[in-house]
Length: 79
Length: 79
Image (tube, rainbow over all chains, first blue to last red; front, side, top):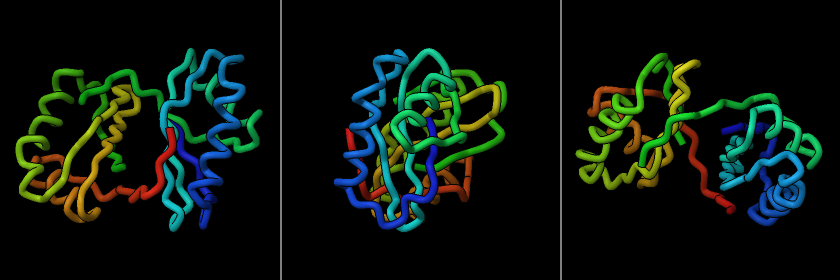
């Protein structure tokens, strides 16, 4: 899970466009971005992805034009 | 999405037990906890839920014995 800040007043369409820039290039890093969630008031975005490493995920975000350094590896999941 | 800290070295079984304490009482607040993810190294847990308000979500966590104040309302989602 990684977190971005500064997405204040971003629309659903803009979030989708940003997410699709990740999806377009994620294969080169063996990463898959599953879902992303936005709070346009605080400007926070959470992205859930899977991949070989945190660094690979961050490289996709960086190449897609929305870098972040805030990421957490989450090996355990419950439903 | 809410975030807990301090779950260092917690196991998958312990996370499941904590999550099930939320599931057992969530209906009283009209909340549903969808998924939870844990990093046992940093001790961070992310919980994805839906419900009528942030306060309702936090009340469930508090009653279940694992309160937090770190929560973000995420009205926009993309896949």
